[in-house]
Length: 606
Image (cartoon, rainbow, N blue to C red; front, top):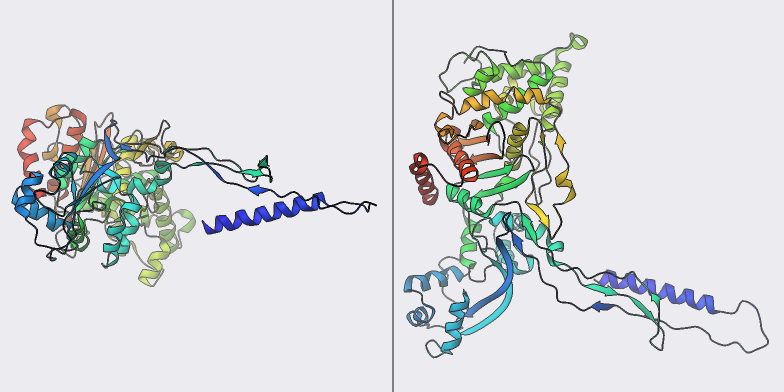
């Protein structure tokens, strides 16, 4: 503000000097010199109108966040407090009173050093007003306009208004992870703040001593009301997906592959969306900040992990493009190369290799990619290896990997794909061999992808080679999304090679496939997918799954990643197909109801 004022002052001084120079006589005259300089005054006039902050709505126009009156009850500054009387006044039982006060304290176990503020409903505030201090004296009720959340779901998507999150920021600064959380959790409230807030209009007249206007000293600006944001999120699907993950560590991303619109965006453990800004949730925020599972971490955008066997899809597509294999290429399940946890027939083709997720098969696929020696480099296998790895990486990067996808959130990690130079430095030699980097073939080692990249990878498979960048806002006011989200991106892989992957992805969920128990054929939905079990040296393996449905006309693509959950087939795939079924049919078939309840109970218990 000070800089803007100084710039304005300098401009005004320059203008006055110019006017003075123009009004000075050019030639001598017999008449006495007269001071004909004209003094002008620059004004900045606000175009009076009331600004309101835009609402946030889901894809079906249900209001999720809006500016509304909030009622705060300030308890007496000093105890004792008659909590029984307070409960009777507000219609709360004694347990609710104690819980609400405990949640409002700055940290768990803190002594109730008043004042404490409690957020009330309109009806509860009406009771306090009507009572006028007769039941519980020294209560203070205030009403103010604040952002109000109508849903508990979607915390990392909705985010918070920075001005209302200052108590959270102060708490965060006192923790080791505070700066990390503050910078990365603003959601669409932070990303689209300027459009949500709107701005005043200003006129900039230049006035003489008599108040007459002589042009303007700066360009006038038009008044712009705050714009509503229409999200891509389906609020009901979001809430359902959060129930499936609950207190577990991981993420679930569902998007429409035809548009890049994100239908559900879950970062788990989940927490209520209002928590960072609620005046009476200081204790809850303290627990979240200190929790070992880091629930405030926006996992889909900020956490990059090895993808495991789901990355075999990318490797297979690249190998087909480079001519390292054909769809009919078969390899022996040679476990002297790498272990294979699945007992299965010989992978005589790419489809069979995908169906059983045969590790030795994809070891040999990647070996064909890296160790192929062109005629021009027949005498230099080291140079050939470097060139092949660089070419593999170039094709893989065209999937939007090793770079940010540009989602409309404040922060996004790029993930990582290794380069030849990386291995030269890591191995301290240029003479590294395929055997020292073979973990790439099964999506382990140095490869790291974010949840957004995993979901986008599934969308690319669904679209046979192209994608729109994943995004969370489909409309701003009466306009569409930001222009960059309407630009179609193509990979460097021919669509025919993606078509060659689909039979194997469908077979994964058919009899004998790694995820056959998650089939939706009983309700007429063919799912195409790929399971992944990610080795973890520090604990239980991580479970992964990517897929889309219906296989022949994809309308939803899903990526699930559950930390320390074991096999992708038994932990991640069931969550993914339930979300698919819920979105495509609206209900879950009776056959999977028990399955659904078991997953939800586990999510609540962790």
